[in-house]
Image 1: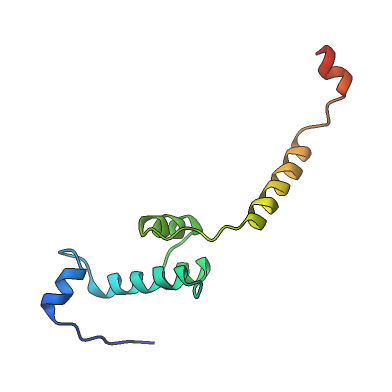
Image 2: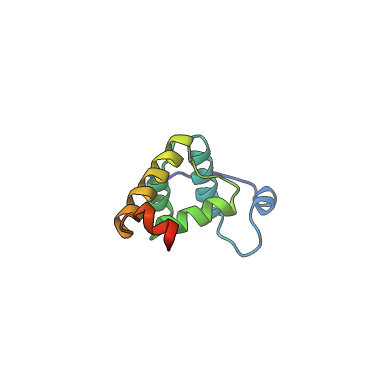
Length: 101
């Protein structure tokens, strides 16, 4: 979809630092607001702005003061995953070995 917005030059110059593309600045503003209002996901922002990775999206959002949507449930899920991964990497330690080791 193509959208055209008519903005007087003197007003547009207030939004866009010298040398930047007004279209890109407007698209980025739309992406940030879409994420803040939970209308756009990280994946949709990546597609909209042409980023290759989620890390680029995270850096973009941080640069624009939009914090990642990360709930307590997400934290608990990550914690449980970390515990499972750690258990797979390290064999269980016999409690007697800890006391004498």
